[in-house]
Image (cartoon, rainbow, N blue to C red):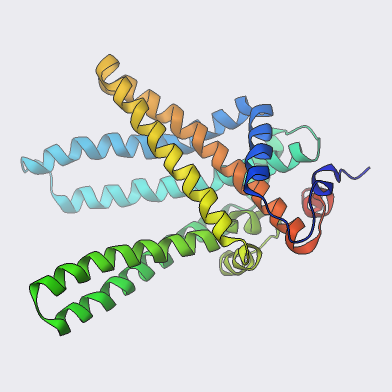
Length: 284
């Protein structure tokens, strides 16, 4: 029998941040061991990159290694991190949907789904990164040209500040629009640009709420991460700081992916009146 309990709690035109967080916390709690392991695997490359980059910065300062070499390895590390992050989100998305359907979340089935969408997800991650960089650069260039035209020091400084602020606003807008692009890629079986358009369609009308949701998660993550490292560093030095940082990254990363899955479900209900079984039929 179709599980419509989730959809019955709200209807067309209704998208509530509180409900998303409550449902995400429930799904996350019920699947914590598996989600935590996925998070560890997904965020290990990024944590290793942070540790590696800190040591390379010291080597650059003494001339033992060139900045070009560090830049190349940094690019490779970040590329691997994108791959792991997008892939883990697809796995967690499937597990979250199965849980919302009151079905057992089999990690092997979720892994198979992630593998089936590997290349579209990889291309999606690359597209999002490139597009955000291009938009930020375009904003900076436009403001920079304006500063040159004005031609005085005060104007240049103000233009520089404006460029940074506008670039941040542009990136935040795009990130909000594309918040459920991974879900659209996996559930709707869409390729990158189609997934971005689908996400923009679903988030339209609710972007302030979604932006608030993203900001809440970002601020919470930043505060907890800073606190964890501040407490861990004097107690155990680099090893304990690394383990603590990885643990928190795994927890918040897995929870964030769960929030995306629940948000996608709720947006489909709010926009299209779909129930959980209709949305997740693609997994059967």
